[in-house]
Amino acid sequence: MKFFLDTANLEQIREVASWGILDGVTTNPSLCSKENVAFDVLIKDICAAVPGPVSVECVSTVAEDIVKEAEKLAGISPNVVIKIPVCIEGLKATKILSAKGIRVNMTLIFSCSQALLAAKAGARYVSPFIGRLDDSSQEGMELIEEIVAMLENYGFPTEVIVASVRHPRHVVNAAMIGAHIATVPFAVMEKLVKHPLTDIGMEKFLKDWGKVKR
Ligand code: E4P
Image 1 (cartoon, rainbow, N blue to C red):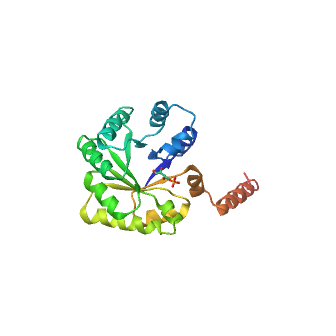
Image 2 (image 1 turned 90 degrees about the horizontal axis):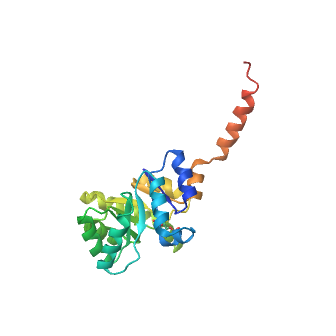
Image 3 (image 1 turned 120 degrees about the vertical axis):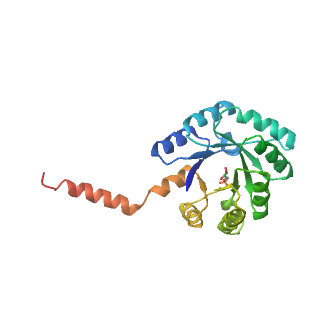
């Protein structure tokens, strides 16, 4: 399973990159708005800090404009993957961009039919938002199961990015289903590593090491 960090915060990105397990980053306008850095500079710096794909979202709403915006964003770094919300104009733009070899991550996916159309349009990634589905009392993980099975049925090369992750169990369940990628907020990433029994065990081993005859 590949791990992406769901943030636009450079400190967090550099920290997790130093753990040796980071495969990429996903940003969105809300995440970028939290950083006090000019957008272009921010994306350039993120791309320099990550050894993998960095999803950057288009805000245009008409296919022609989305394509123009995407080409500009893709010019920032070869790492850039264009994030486009799933909608008719987005599908049209995805078809054009994927034909030009520009990778697209279709985002704000809340149904299997949206993921199917995104894959048919040539999206390299689809991002189903499971936490937001859970928030509206729908089982987000069921959507991951459906999308993974559907893509497998037809051999689509599209990868599933499990997005809107709220806790470690989301990541584990996604891994059990065989989802390709989880994009994880920093706080959840830390929780994936931590276990109180590990801390207690380490403390005891260190204490006992002090008693070992050397
Ligand atoms: C994914 O690419 C999105 O940036 C993200 O996972 C959205 O998560 P949220 O529902 O916590 O805002």
